[in-house]
Length: 392
View 1 (cartoon, rainbow, N blue to C red):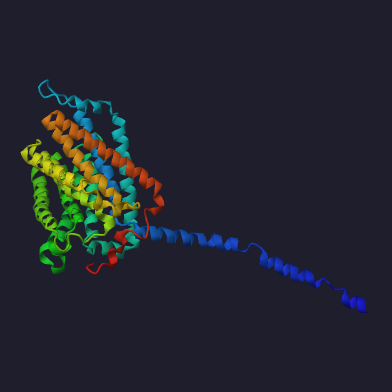
View 2 (view 1 turned 180 degrees about the horizontal axis):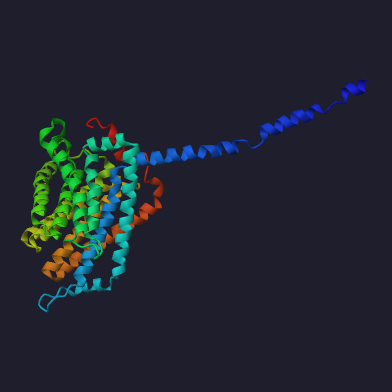
């Protein structure tokens, strides 16, 4: 009897089965169910960090595509014996036309991608877009997408030409938002106490001027002289006031983080673009265009001779590095127009040096971006603190 009472070890089987059920890989289906929320949260976080400053990339690609188009037109132009350009420009005859087309297609793809993601940001994080619109630095980058589209329109392949209905529709679509932003920005500069130019002026304010000048050049290519003069005068009038304000270093002149110091290159981007716009309006690279080009060369030399200014911003990769490329492309464009007009060895050498430098910087930024893709949407981006700015 005692043996029968001691024998039942079968109870251990019940204990082992319970352990087996508890130690089975149950978390796997739970993790699978959590994948969708995690993915959506990551996407939402990326959209929250994708500010308008990322359109620096599209500005650089669009201006580089326009540079290649103008260089190709310069090299393929038929000159008379007396007007033959410098032999130094013969190097551009070896450039294949397909490269320009591929660069334009790549620029279009990048601009469409960034625009799509920013539209999603406007839909899901409108409060952040509103914070950019109210900030004295962030609002200037809202000109970048429309300026990028206008640059891409001017560098379009031959099947999209001026004086056509599609070109006209696209120009109006991209220029009207710039005028609306002009009314807001320029109106605040002399009507709103906390938004006076002396309080909010910073190098990024020149992006508003660039948008007007790019739009003026596009209008001049359609032979819309009055519209181009309107946008040109609107941009240059405010550029003169802005340039003097920034030159005197008033209270708002240095109100940008150290990581954003590459935007100082916009100082010579505006006169470069102004020379191109006026050249399209007047029909030739005349004295006024040359004066603006020489001013841009002087400002470029002044910044390049002070590399210590950009030391802090170059310690680690940031999207602000793309601010180096677009102004250099603008200066290269102006030098190309100048070399085409002057047809001398010195002008051709200046064009080759600046164009080569802009291309090297462009390629270097592409490689740096590819190697630091994971850092593009980082939390320590200086623009992400705009919503916390007391002036917003």
